[in-house]
Length: 278
Image 1 (spheres, helix red, strand yellow):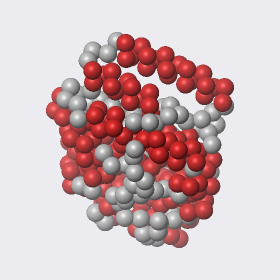
Image 2: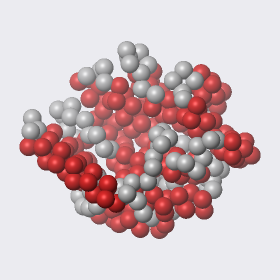
Image 3: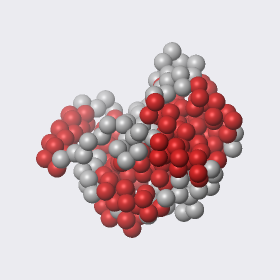
Image 4: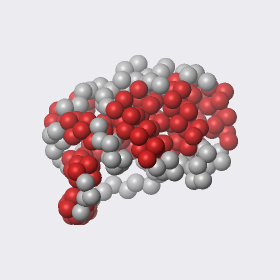
């Protein structure tokens, strides 16, 4: 959701990408060093496919692993009931290699999904001491501060802008206004936001935060109709931290994948959304 140039993917291009992914994952599975690496590749295959049968069970098994094999595609598991298992998994991964920033990002995100904002912010604090920073952590930190209603701290984070591109900063400002419950400010910022209407995942997340259910559902229907749309909706759900960003009956493809997966819906709401009443 923090990428700002996403032209629609044509079906032929999507089919070619899917074929390339299958080839890469086949190669990954054949050359895996251990069973957990093979399971990780299989899990990625499920997530990027049009059949999520067994996704929840496979995710739970992967998060129970002990060999520090990172699960690359974990959007749905974190948001749909496996956050506690993911938190433990990434805590172990950090112990294995404390210099991998991606581990801290996933650990902080999983911690926030469990509702533990103190652990979220502690993990982010540890990440900030690494030689290389990860700008994605700023969004998780903003959400954690909003969950604690520490709005002054959240405003300082947005204003610091050390690693914040113009587009990302505008996105944060809209979300923060919505988290405060200031509908007029959020809408004014949205109307002035140069990327409004240009990136569907970002639109969906911000419209949900602003409580515009009809508009959020309209965007979700479009995303659901696109190649890999169900993956994009899972990703958006994770990063929104707002419960269900859309109504599941508006997204038949995503609904079908969830029915296959074994994951529940709707997700819980780890951060209060005063403008969003669903």
